[in-house]
Length: 316
Image 1 (tube, rainbow, N blue to C red):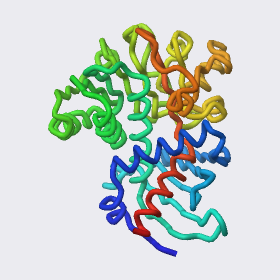
Image 2 (cartoon, rainbow, N blue to C red):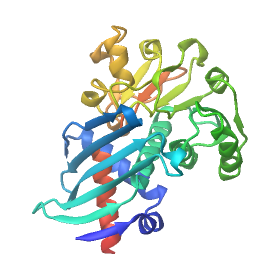
Image 3 (spheres, helix red, strand yellow):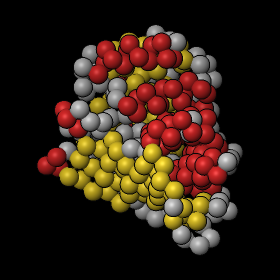
């Protein structure tokens, strides 16, 4: 069994590979070609930690994968990154382990950013975008770098629940994106007049209200990957012209859709589409000046597709 360290994976696997992987994953899901168990989540409240286990097999691929990823939110106080984890790759014919990818969440960060980019490509207006970004941590960087590959950005206004992150984000991401990046003092200021809103925090309570959003905004909600997490007021989903999810089953048990349904403001059948259905043309993408919410909770198929691409790269 191969053991591959984080640095080798960073040198081997790019954002372009991740974009390829998420298309494979979401196509497979909507074509019924994915075997995917429900995710496992574990909360360790005393240390502000969370652990997620996800996995899947994309039928027809040579490997399947199981992933363990964690987020421990006091780690920066110890001089450690918030996220860590590993991805296990197995032979899809024999079940034997092939590789242990010690990525420290690098592959998860990549595929999550790529899913946001796919959502932006399919659902946001095709013009230079004014972006409102909620969160300025690691995933906020992956999201914007990936989205910049598929859409032209006009400006980015960013707010963070950790104010000291803002100046570092401005200094790094302005040059990286080659657009104005401005830290602001409130979530409302960040999303004012935004064409595209991206939320990437571990919040347990809504950070955005419906009245703050532009009528034709595209909202990509990334942070709510557990049943207790929430970044959007449920009224936002209730008022949306379209709610698109990465997985119907998963988003009805966790994520923003889960909260809107639990609040009685949205019926499960009101989900417009899974992202893969829009990708395949089975369901409509944007139709005019409408509010669209895309609820991305992160699915095991993304990890399996990433594992397949990594394995092919390792095999040469």
